[in-house]
Amino acid sequence: MITAGARRAHAIVLAAFAACGVIQVFLAGLGVFADPGAFISHREFGYLFGWLTLVALVLALAGRLPRRLIGATVLLLVLFAMQSVLVALRADMPAVAALHPVNGFAIIGLAVVTARASWRVRDAVPAPVAAADLGAPASSGLD
Image (cartoon, rainbow, N blue to C red; front, side, top):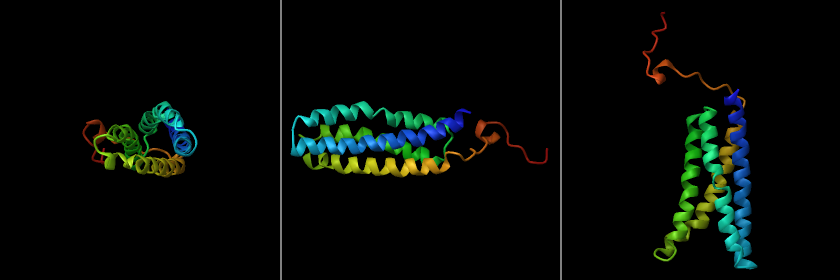
């Protein structure tokens, strides 16, 4: 069943995303303490694994996960997109751009929390779609 597979894959994709986030912190650390050229690797690796946020969102929707998990996945995608915006602000608003590492840690934390929550509901049976959700008249229950 697609729904069950999507639920399992959602948790796995988010766990992989969180692991990639930890690698990002390591690459940034290399750029600060060892080789400034490592920041290029940091940037490129971020672009390489960023698409996992979109994959996670598609899986959350296909898996008909609870709204809070879908919302957390959307928030993860938005926070990840904000990373590039924060870097772009470094010349004009350095104090705002300094939120880039803070946002990065928020992304990793949210990915871990969401992956754990997704793992807990992975085998739960999704609620059936109500007739009212499909635009059809709701049954009175007396039919």
